[in-house]
Image 1: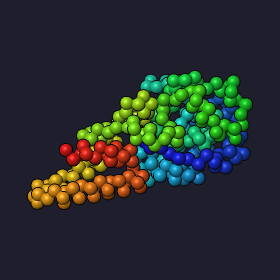
Image 2 (image 1 turned 45 degrees about the vertical axis):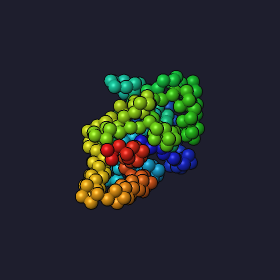
Image 3 (image 1 turned 90 degrees about the vertical axis):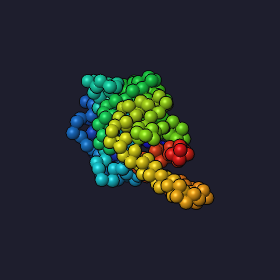
Image 4 (image 1 turned 180 degrees about the vertical axis):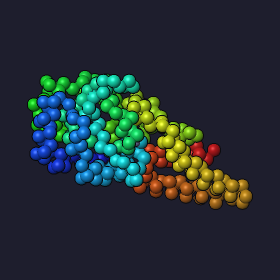
Length: 265
Ligand SMILES: [Zn+2]
């Protein structure tokens, strides 16, 4: 995960007449009808793809050649049968709220499902929000977060330093972890330790490790310490240049950059 900066200006399509009508209808129904995809239109997906650099908000895998899902941070539906988490609240009234829409891959999206655990007090829709218009529910995230204190990390609400400080990777397995309670919860809910992700991350790590080993072998052959130091410095520079381009798994890039010395031993 990495911090995401999003222009708060709400795309007009999210508050047009058609969506206002659906929003008012859903108030009566008290849920978001399955099959309604009015939040998932091409222009919104395109805008989110630019904001998220075509990467999943949670696992950071690239979505250039795979399905892009509009992920509702606060779920638009509930699932009373959910076992792994509290999924008992439908935030149907936030289905068209710009600050509630993230971009995610199929696996993270389905793994998260309707989960939304909090440690604060659940928002009281009837008491505080039922009278608001669609335009008025567009900018509530700060208020809601303060009251509810969600466990799920929202990349749009965190500083980059939060991820840099608290995310860790096992250099032998590619597995992601965190001692931070909210990040650990997010890793669990989105299943970010899944085998396919570990494999992809490990490929990146081993690729770099192989390059380092090539330099080490050169050093053993030529015994030229100055050349070895220069080669390693160049590898590190290339790594940092790649990190600046916001590649897929940029959190791993950052972690390796910080722990580069560990790969040399
Ligand atoms: Zn993902």
